[in-house]
Length: 277
Image (cartoon, rainbow, N blue to C red):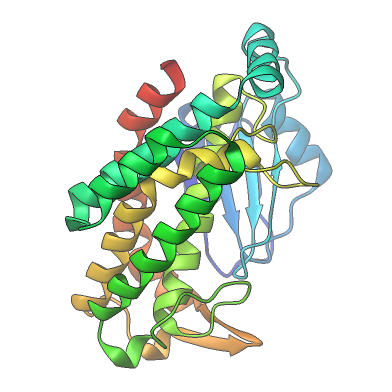
């Protein structure tokens, strides 16, 4: 998927015929599938209509992880949606188990997780979604204990915190998860899936449950990327601001957008495999 990210301190986006103008650059809408607008940027309704009719999906997001997706009003792959609904209704268990097994497989590949073999056996014997979720929750608690031991102590409080994150490393993790979740949701929409209907995660209001399912195998790779950002001192503690929780400032996002976009794009091959399996 080709996408453009707008994360600059401008009041509103400007459009010229079939192009979007960003910092004196003109990007033809035909060259991108999605436009991610980060921050407080104004968009006029006729511009949104123009973008939609060019087939470009728009994601509006803020620094605290809130987002909304606006996509082209054209039906895509209705047969796929029908099959997705039927699987969710009749037998979601195999799909849910697949994503948890993939999560563990990738975590073992990235970190050499010592308990993976034991948990794989427990998953193979699980009989219900509730049991699967319990196994995954137990794994995640142990996983984060080991993860935070790998990072400098000044960056974290030795536990996972979210909604809101309470320390710089958790702020990076939350940023990465939210961006990956949004990116996967855009890919799902583009492929014709209904992103709000999941198998492992429960649909709720504006939650893209299927995107939450699909992100699971990518979490360890996101964690590794963010730990590398810390180890390489790509961002500093001054790149975070506190407002109830702790969040990455615009200065910090500017430092990691390019390598982060490359990392997101590297997920495409596996996403294509998941979507066709």
